Length: 88
Image 1 (cartoon, helix red, strand yellow):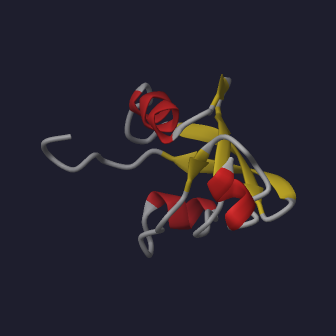
Image 2: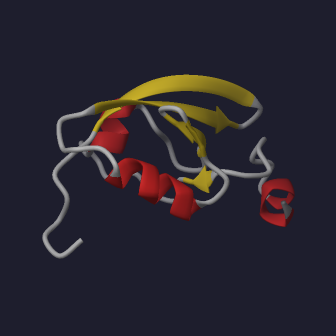
Image 3: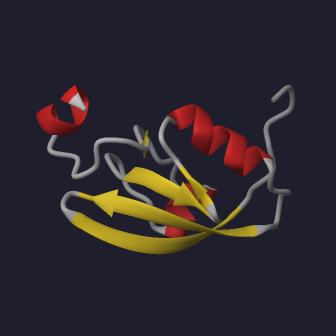
């Protein structure tokens, strides 16, 4: 909550997007730095660990719906799960 207020994120819980790799799955889905992911599919996201777990439940090539807060605006995007780097 303190970070949400400090950075005016618009959501008190969720997974904060710190960086978006150019041409990566997040970029292709339209995610931006400082977005807060609050839902992945049917799973509410309280922390970044929740987001990782929800995404790991998907296979590369799956399309998942993400609910995101950007500033004070809520939006829904679809992301295609990419290949995971080896060792993860």
